[in-house]
Amino acid sequence: MIETVVAATVLATALVALVQVSVVSTLAAARARDTTRATLAAAQKLEELRSGPYDAAPVDASDVVDGRLLRRWTVTPRPPRAVVAIAVEVSTPGRAIAPVRLETIRAQPIP
Amino acid sequence: MMRVRGLGHRSRGVGGFTVVELLLAMAMTLAIMAAGLALAQPAQAALRVQLESIDVTQRLRAAVDSLTRDIRMAGSGLPPGVPAVTAYQPGSSESGVTVRYMPAEGGGMTTRSYYVRVDDRTNLSELRRADGSTDLPVVDHVASALFTCFDEHAVGVPSCGEAERIRRVRIVLRVEGVVRHTRRPDTVLRVPSADVVVDIALRAPGGG
Image 1 (cartoon, rainbow over the protein chains, first blue to last red):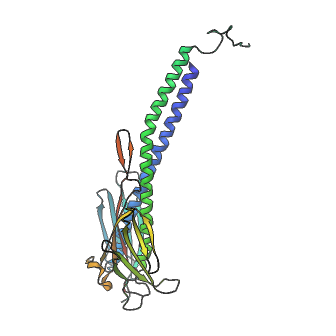
Image 2 (tube, helix red, strand yellow):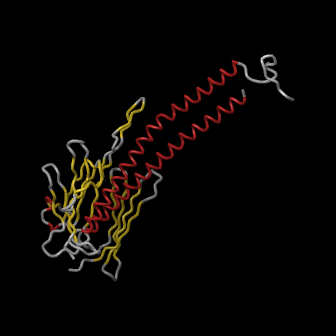
Image 3 (tube, each protein chain N blue to C red):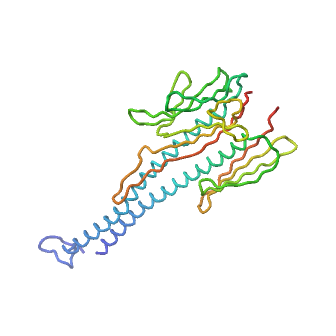
């Protein structure tokens, strides 16, 4: 009887472990999808800032994308050169996902 | 001590199991396996959806990468008067965008058009790339790709018509799963489609 109980316990443990693996992989895939979306949201704002008129005035602003991604961007002049540093950071509040941060340098167009 | 098993010597004190014990053990094993399978079955369905969802995201990335690579280059090294971006309409129900640039590695002008076509026979929708001599699929199951051009003040340029004004191209992409849903005993799990808005700024909008 004891052998049977031990065998049944081992079997149950193995099954639970198998289910656990699928749960972990599902969570990892969801995290990867969220990171991709955050990266796309950051890239979108970065491209938008790059395509606008060149302005050396500092900017610090934020918005919410898709109702759950918090996006913050800054434009910082880098004197004495005629360039600005653009940084966009997207975080997902309430979820254990590292924020995505993209940075670039934009030079004043030559007339 | 050596145990002797045989019809004549079998008893509870010597060894082996009784029929009741065996039945009980089998019943317990079956109950545990049934519980395990009941747990595993929904997990398996969820895993199938998850794998499909990963594939959707992967195809989305491939589409965005391909579009970004070409649209970002649009206008680079072009001679005066050649538009960097124009609308592309190969069929009555299809619309896309054409970009032109001189590749950094030399050679002639590169002209590439991106659009979504739905095959009437297979009902398969694809993001396609045409370059004058070839017209090939880039990513399949792209349900739609809407292209909008903007000038530097974020004002839309209708039909990407005034090429010299265009500074940015916005693409609204929808990528769907090859498998739309999977069934499990109590419900149907849907594979979510991926809808994204991608903006790509032209690095050399006025040529050069």
